Every structure is written in structure tokens, then in C-alpha cells.
Figure 1 (cartoon, rainbow, N blue to C red):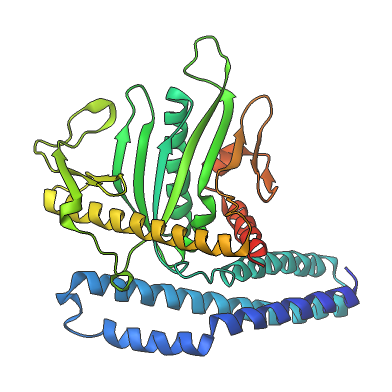
Figure 2: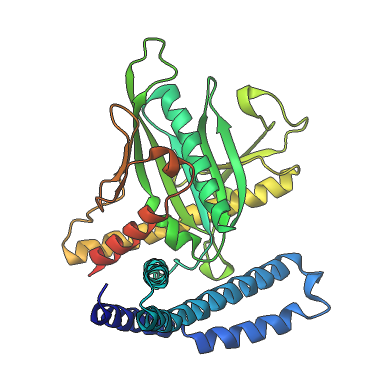
Length: 368
């Protein structure tokens, strides 16, 4: 790479980094960290475990973001020195090292730039993810379970905490549905582009004739509700059923009727939770999921009104959005962004950052 090209590349990276730093507002971030550190040091912090968890989680997140931003800025500044050294010594090995670092920094800047595009009302929230098997019988149930694993592995790769709230297992294999939380700031904004219908094409392992099968699973992503959201729920409009929790194949994993299913009668929305030992805890978790679904319903209704005013007919991009093809060829392709990967197994193992970044950029373009 020529010196002039390197110089222009470094200027471009530095300029992009300045924009990122401005959006993140590093001075405000440092001030917030100072306040949170003071709160975290208070002797009475754990008197309120829920609030303590929020404080320590937020502090850890901001400290990590600040370290990452400052480290990336330092790497950009060091690159100029590294290229100058390679040129001065006319050393091919040092030049190759500098070019590899440049490619790595460019990728890191692109990833961080995507975060600055998450500016929606609820984008900074944690996420609730619901996956349900759709058309395709046992293959669809198996595919739904693969998607659950994919998202949980993605969260694990990033060090994000997760909690499975409810899983309804299918009789032969896989799951009918599942709901789980991803407990990280911006989890909703990041994963919301995954909402829609996912399609799997493969030779069915459940077909003794080895025929190709197409199956579908739906993904719904909701922002976790906070106290400021004011989602009013009239208790008289709820039907609450309790039942015994069950595991794979219907085997009992609980000896008491602790699982809770809540039906919101006006909307027909049904939520359930069975991961806690206590019926009271399961009811509280189910109510949180119901509030999130009602909040999303309200958001969609408001968006539909705006779309009608804009005259775009409420164009929906969230129906069939990604194909996972395992036969006759290997490919995963996003139908909105055209982003594709030739290794489906890596995607199903949680390597979905490329799809998430492409989806976030695509969504931002649609908003213009």
C-alpha cells in the first residue's frame, strides 16, 4: 500500500473515530462513571439487590465502552508510527504487520460506528427474544431450537448474561416456542433487526426417505420494560392459569404447579414462565414479558399511524428475512440486506455479527 494511500486511510479512520467519540460523548460517559462508582461504593448498595444489579451492570458496561473507545483511538494513533517505522527501515515484515493492524483497526472502527446508529427510543434497552416454530412440523421445531442456541451462543461470545424464561418442548424433537432475556445495554437495538421469519432448507434428519424439507421459525424481539414506560394492565382483563413445569419429552421437572400462563383477554396475547421455583416469581416474570409485548404493540400502532401519514402503506420489512440453506448448497443469506455467508454452521454457532451490522445499517438507510 502506497504511503499516500495509507495517509488518506488513516485520516479517514481518525475522522470517523472523531464522529464516534462525539456521538458517544466521552466526557458525559466519564461523568456517569464517576457517579455510578460512588453509588457502587455505598455500604447500603445491596439492600436493594435489583437496583444494585442495575448500577453495577451499567457501570461495568460504561467502563468497558470507554476502555474500548480509548484503546481504539490509541491504535489509530500508533498506526502512523508503525507505517513510518516500516518505511524508514524498508522492512517487509514490519510493513506486513502494519497492514494487518490497519485492516484490524478498520474492522473495529466499522463495528463501533454501527453502535452509534442505535438511536431509537428503546435501542439502549435489554432484550426479550421470543422464538416459535412455524410451518414445517418437527423440522420447524428443531430449527426453532437451533435459533435459540444461535442467539444464546452469540450472547455468550460477547459476555452478555442471558436468562431463559420459558420453553415449550415439542413432542418428537426441538421446541414449540421459547422466551429468553439478553441482559446487556443495547441488546434490543442490536437484536431487533433479527425480527421476522427465518427459513431453513435442508435434507430432513426426521424423514426416513431423506427428502429435502423447508421449515420456518418466527423471531420476535422486544425491549425490556422499565418503570417509566407506564404500561397499564387491568387485572380484571387477565386470565391466569397455573400448571406443572415440564422439560424435554414432557418429563416432569417440578412437583408443584409453579408454572404460570397469563392471557391478556383484550388482545389475546398469551405469555408464560416456568423457569423459577416459585409461582409468585414466575407470575412476576410473565407479567414483565406481557408488559413488553403490550409496549411493542403500542409502538407498532404508533408507527403504523406515522407510516399512514407518510403514505408508505406501512411497508413491513420484518416478514421472511433470512434463509439458511444446507442443501443442495451451503449458504445463509439475509433477504433485505443481501449479506450472505457460505458457512451456515458458523452462523448457527452464533457468529451473526456481520448480519446484525448489515441489518442495522440497512434499517438506518430505510429511515432516511
